[in-house]
Length: 307
Ligand SMILES: [Zn+2]
Picture 1 (cartoon, protein in one colour):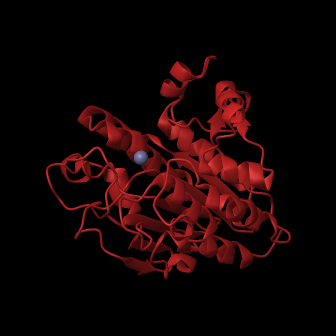
Picture 2 (cartoon, helix red, strand yellow):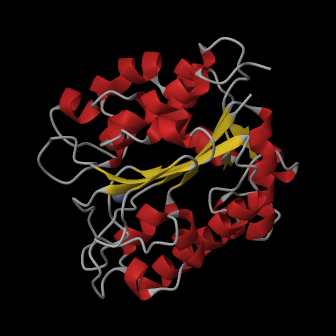
Picture 3 (tube, rainbow, N blue to C red):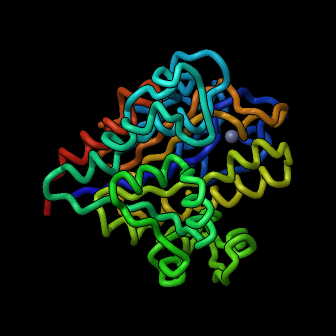
């Protein structure tokens, strides 16, 4: 059975090579290696179609005017339905009410669970108790956690994190330990990538969400931007080393641009990257916008015999 590890990055677009673009100014060998030794700036970030590697720039505006937002972008990404059209606008950061029934019935975890013979999917992020309390109180869940609730996928806890069954949202756990209200053991990022590579063997589809790219983009703080891009650089370097790409296909994409343009604290209209590395990569070759990702994941998983 083949597997997919989906690393979702919030707020990463492909922008021009200006001095406001950290992908132009920083040395990021891990990011570059992921994209077939290309810089993550246009026009250098070219499409690649190889048997084990697909690289694309895909549209995040979804045919709707205005700046893309996380609620509608992520709902579209994780269902395959254009939720910006459903809402009549870009909306975020939480899912728009018009997307609720689509998320409930068509999110990628629900669709994956319906495929016969596959191990149930998992969301690898660990959530502190105070996250559950705050989300429950206001019934306000992020798109990914809403997908888990709708698919009855358990959200991982700090207990799972301590026992090596989950990953900290900030990778090494340093930031999480400041906000969790409970002790978190910090680990180096190469160990995080090894853990991800091993955890994704336990299910057909594993998702990891990294939201600090969007947060850093909104901060407009070059030090924060350098820190998050550097951490992800280490993660990608580690994943390229530790993943078995015959068995696991790594998919990386985003919901909208932001961090690639430090001249604005807002999201951008830039296209977002789509990278698929591994034997299921060809299923991702025809994707042109966010709505193509979930159907490609499901088609790819359908093609792999159960074992
Ligand atoms: Zn944002």
